[in-house]
Image 1 (tube, rainbow, N blue to C red):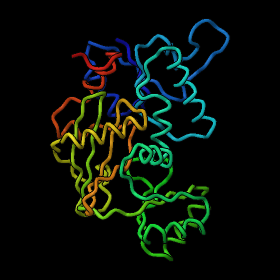
Image 2: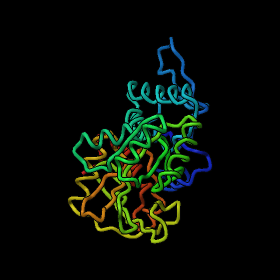
Image 3: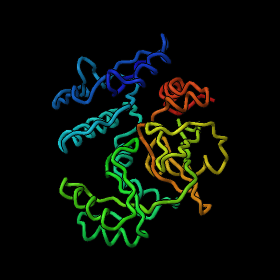
Image 4: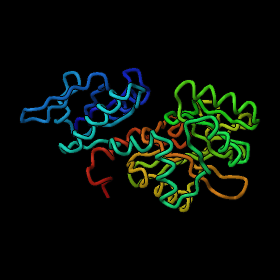
Length: 293
């Protein structure tokens, strides 16, 4: 089968997909900047470089780079039109849009009945300080769009919070505050590839942030029925078929659903579990109705 992969040409994940594909599938890397749309012809009219995207068996989205509003909207439009033309897009434009927007994602997770941290989103410092107090004076401030722990800060001092929030407003940011959840320096990542689930613990005794990219150690995780149920509920709320669901066991005994990554990494997970995740993703992409029995 022929799969197009939206990824950086230097991406580890692109290399891993090519390795897993071997001679069974053709992998063609494409970039967002090369996307071209044509109207008025009989064909799909969507391409990237020399690749007619209407002719590929599936498009795997492996990156979501920043861009202007126009660029981002056009890119999502192209993904949406590909789906409408019958091309399988993993994950869909709608799922990526929901996952990348922390406010929208949190709202969808809460609406699905999942336990999430209390959240306050606003655009002025005065409003944010009201939220700071409502959330107990100990909050995590996150960029509305972001990943891998970049731009996240914990604020538990009123004066420092006011200065930091003012700086963010001056930069044109939306202020996204969540209550800080006391935890034991560990969170859980459940990766869903269709109906298959894989998990790991991420532990960082030196930092409250548990991202592997920030130095957390990855450890094996024995998935329970409840963990998989929560992860699947979260992925369905976002609409993602391949999803990295982050769960946080709080010191209060509750399991918090933090976010769903619709372009999840798997390098650490493959290493910890010994599972060839790239092969799992390709097997899923090759079966329109999901994995074979």
